[in-house]
Amino acid sequence: MRILSGIQPSGSMHIGNYLGAVRQWVNSQNPDAYYCIVDLHALTLQIEPARLREQTVDYLASLLAAGLDPEVCTLFIQSQVPYHAQMNWLLECVATYGELSRMTQFKEKASRQEGYRVGLLTYPVLMAGDILLYSAQQVPVGDDQRQHLELTREIAERFNNRYGEVFTVPVGVQPKASARVMDLQEPTRKMSKSLASPLGLIYLNDTPQEIDKKIKKAVTDTDNEVRFDWESKPGLSNLLEMYSSFSGESPEVVAGRYDRYGDLKRDLAELVIASLEPMQRRYRELRADEGALRALAARGAEKASAVAGSVYERAAAAMGL
Ligand code: ATP
Ligand code: LTN
Image 1 (cartoon, protein in one colour):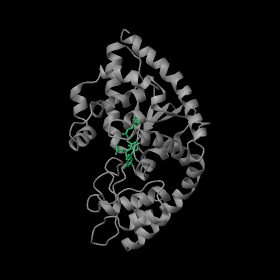
Image 2: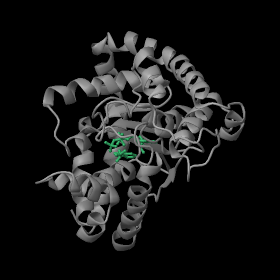
Image 3: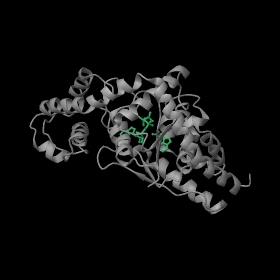
Image 4: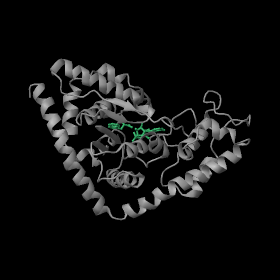
């Protein structure tokens, strides 16, 4: 199964990224799976160059620590495969201004700043290129990327109709649980790197004390009945679903074991701490050898380029270049 997905090296990786996307990557990795750290996407918002460089390596270590195996799949850095930027231009001449300006994520992010970059608007086109360059059949992503996936399909079909069959039309794949992990402080908003509220996110590298504190302070409601119900109990349901994602039980079964929010929070904190601990240990070992991480990314980019290059050439030729 040909798979491609990407993650932005902005901020630090959080459990929304892990449960919504990266854990699916690990479970579906195979010799035909390509995973990239999308550093070009990270330029759409303000980021210090030195931080971007550093975080890109952090992400390599985090993805390996989470369980990606470079002997099985291909892991690479987007900017090291120049076809992504080239394909972006071809597809900007296929996508329309109207459809890009209707993207929810664009409207949200643009409304929060003055003088936003053109890249913030065209970002889904770059993403479509990421996917189409690898003829991906499946794209494992969190729920927030559904709309961008739909647009990718639309662009692929339009291109194929206009210029001939070049692209595979991909489908987005969401996990059964935790496709949308909510912010612990504002449980009606998704946990997000770019809108980080200090206590709202659990990072994969948080200390046990930080995890404990954030879960204990998570916003719930006041009626004190432990019930899985997103409509009337978003904060509590978010915690139950998180529990269920780490333990493998259904959220209803977890809810049935508790009478008090405090007990659930205590056990959830313990479960999250224990689940992240082995990854944190591996992360520290891997991050210590930056040379090895960079060498691995270079090998990944070489493998990725061979695949992306041939699709790019076909797309360019089909358009008359
Ligand atoms: P931002 O919110 O600033 O756009 P992000 O936290 O969404 O950033 P990305 O690198 O853009 O991070 O996303 C990587 C993957 O993680 C994507 O597949 C995305 O759908 C998924 N993801 C992000 N946030 C969540 C979340 N709260 N719950 C589930 N999946 C998520
Ligand atoms: N837009 C995504 C990140 C992303 C991506 C991709 C995901 C960039 N390119 C290709 C899947 C496939 C996001 O913001 N989460």
